[in-house]
Image (cartoon, rainbow, N blue to C red):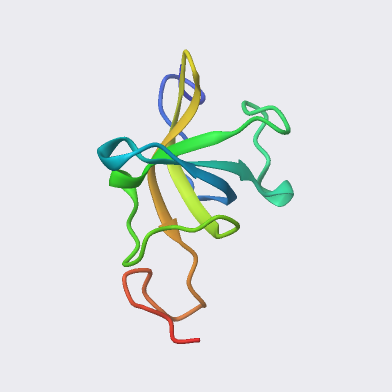
Length: 100
């Protein structure tokens, strides 16, 4: 099942990574939507996962990192985002490293 009339959530949604799981090619992130980004289709407290192979950042995602996820579908085992990226400060590309 996907959002609306059979199409995925296309808007980018803020979420926070709770944990990274798996080994090798099967690694994935488990995240939860930020309270300001809640969607009616995804109940409060329900997780959304994304494969690290779908990650669009220069560095691997980390626990506690706030990210944007989109292209979200419902599967038998839960919600899955097919795209994810880090949130960079305004005016920078998500593909660029942000110096701390």
